Image (cartoon, rainbow, N blue to C red; front, side, top):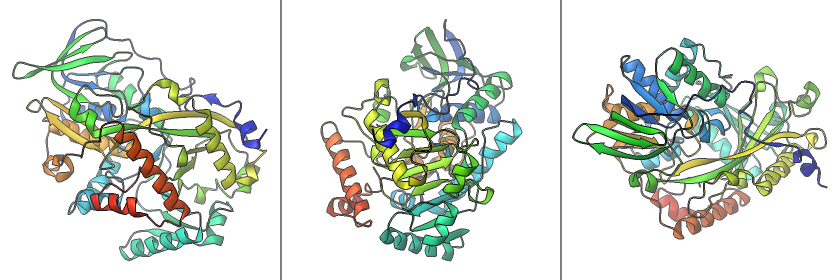
Length: 473
């Protein structure tokens, strides 16, 4: 048996964050008809932050939040916990999608993160936040040259960045595959425990702010009523409200505009047992000055970080998958081939740990990917129903901003933000099947080929770049 198989064989099929020792009991499901001012559908980051911000803006607002399973399920409880100030998936994508708004969106992202962290402090929510910045590592000499050029551009722009050459980067985190590293150490970027964030927000909403939350409650349909109302038919009852915010992200929406703007892409992760001090020393990782949140500098990139108890979570890369016809069935989380691929790639990066550590958890989850590679907000029914979906893997911080846009579109202290093209510009819809599946797979293969070619993009990716669609997949 290969060593990576042995290391993975006893891993539990469950997100690392879903630790029963810290998960709260689900709240009761909806059991009768209810009414409220604002109904929020979805108990992930967007829904929870929307309830929080709506209450902050209008403390007497009567709010109900419903969740099909439990708060913190879905993408919000299955991600890597990387916290970024970017709200539009990075500078390159921002400039391509929203010309002229890059500076404003950067400013809004910084403001959003400041308020995010202030909320955690104000309500004493321990999400295990670590301010470690973000660091890209190059896996070949060609990528190192491109990454160094990016460093020079950042330095010239006045950003607080640090360049590590091959020798220096391996002193930070020791892998024989590293040829250079670019560390963005300014700002508030870092890592958190996503489950603790969800459940901390849930506790504050219910026990301090008076939001009613019903878990294990599926919305079956939502329709306008008259000129100023909405009606949501749910398993267990009907909820009448003035406003509705849909925060269901990758899950199939009842609204065609939402359904056509995003596709569900599966991302898979594995997590190690807690590393000992000796094991951390072997890879030079874990010292207070080098607890970096890392991603390799590829199109199909891996992302990896340390948890508070010194586990390594490892995800992404070539294990990302789109399944034909929007496959979202829960059984797709159990993907032995994807998890084995991740384990093998982990030991390629850290061969010092092969035979020494085991993986304790393996899991998968769906990301809502839009054609503009960042959130897609929208509103209809004369401002009675709004949404913010499609974070494309960068939603841990951006979801709070998406929630802000959603409640502003519903009339909760709207600002000039909702007039920006970031909000008003519609995302291109995804092609229907089978063209969608063929296009995604073809593009993924082209991205993998570019990674193998020192980053050189072929004709297909150059064509997508012209359309503003070649950023990632």
